[in-house]
Image (tube, rainbow, N blue to C red; front, side, top):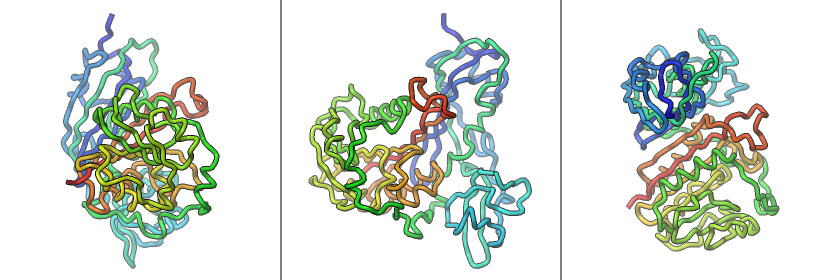
Length: 401
């Protein structure tokens, strides 16, 4: 018998928040395993739409500025002297970047442990201009909610989604430019690394392990299946022993370019294999317009010459071809570039967006985030304060022309 939502139900739901910026479209998704329809807080009209829905149903609702996120408030824009910034936390503020509010001194209601983000809107000789408003303030938001499972409530315990707008805290919106201006990601040698030794030595030993849990891999694989048409010629940049492509996606070919021959040889999806160090030689060993799509999974943080690599990816893609980047929140620290280690997860999508926009070779930029999925119980990290699946972040663009 199929369960339907009513006020005493529990449900698993996927909340997809869609919004737009000056550079493209954005979808920030949060999965909530235990929505409590009695305790959790929703706008009244949205709550009414949920009633009597069941597994597989989709609820859509548009929110104007101020309906889900508070409207922009000019009182949240402050001009602060330099001595009101904690230099131990923010040695040098940069235009458009986000920092924790706890770094600000003598702000009513803000304490040192506060990690909510604020945005730097200007830096000059007298001080720093900061914006405490939510980064989605003033934007239209379209919500698509997918009901995955409904079941009765057997005990009076709170759900994990206490307020709908709370799912947009501390992240969504940070990937967009401020006033369509270039964010200052590229000062202070951003691509230096703590380990500048030859990458060939670091990657000499094969690592035949997954860098995401199975739930996160399923998210990435599903997105590939949605974005890459059947019959495509695909380039897998910074490839390894798995490409995360759907098994049932029939492709013309998959060329893998990576750092370790053993890893590439272990990848059954590849039709050709190329050992190649992009940091040493960003020029790709392929002709112009060879590929319909290019992917780079869980590796963009290691690129020391990203602008060159993205330009080369555009060269080898056909007009209209997609370049698809994905990452999570863990990496090999010695080889990650410095700027990556300093940014909030959502800011990293903004950084990768700047890679796309640098040479005007890509358009139609999209970002996607997925958080909140339960970590599979068989995962080795399950139960070690890691009950949630690894977050997945993606940025993709379409080659101009």
